[in-house]
Amino acid sequence: MLDWIYVALGLVLLLLAGDSLVRGAVNMSLRVGIPALIVSLTIVAFGTSAPELLISIQSIYEGVPGLALGNVVGSNTANVLLVLGVPAMFAAMHTSDCDTKKSYVQMLAATALFMVICFLGPITWQDGFILLAALAAMLTWAAFEAKKHREAEPDDEEEIEGADPNLGWGKILFFLLLGIIGLPLGADLLVNGSTNIARGFGVSETVIGLTLVAVGTSLPELATTMSAAIRRQADVALGNVIGSNMFNLLGIMGVASLFGTIPVDDEILSFDIWIMLGASLLLIPFVFFKMDISRIWGVILSALYATYIFLVLV
Image 1: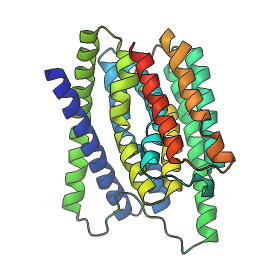
Image 2: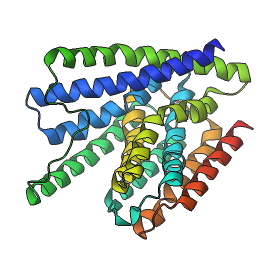
Image 3: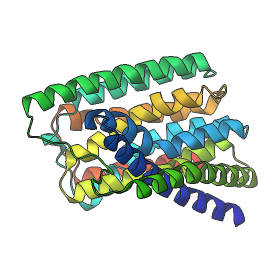
Image 4: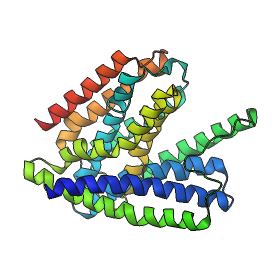
């Protein structure tokens, strides 16, 4: 029971500390004159992925790298099936109005690159540099596209997550400190608790990463997507999933592999990585053929995820 409490407390700490770090970093960056475009493409993007990143690094230090890999693969599967499926059951998402083709193709390219590296595994620091180089190229392209959009529509100001012009330096430093202390503490609690639970149930750390940890770290994306679906902002919902998946594959695995070699389990190669790819390909009708993610589709996606979790655990 104590290990479950550690996991729950670790998740809460990670979510609160991650949000705190984003708020502090965004407002400090804007105060010192860093352009809002750069802040939104880098600090916000990396900050919202901080919990997954810290878990991956902590897992390597604790000698359970399978938890790191399972977390990324499981999170990407959960992002499509669970994070899009559950909100769609409550409010249909009109993805037919969205133009996410270019971002989606980039996500598929990132998925293909990641899969090749996994099959050539283990994942080493050299692979990490390749993944991070791909991420840098995609961020450069995103910056170029955003700059063109801003020049074409100068009055279309982008709202940056966590930005607060009234936030004083004292609060900014407090949020930064809370994030810096809370993230590693939460990651340590979650990794240790998850590892003990895995051993208690006689399953591998990879399985725990694919299920318990993956769902837990996908909760921020689920909350964001639920809110976007209710407000009829399908572009935010779909873009959130696509962007998160790219960062998981390129950013998190890229940085994590710099801290230690990550072995790739046979079960990941034979089953889970293909489910991740299949889930990603399920978005094709919504991205290219102007289909909405209706309530029926929400039920189908959620049922597919429940089936996947059942197959992983049995």
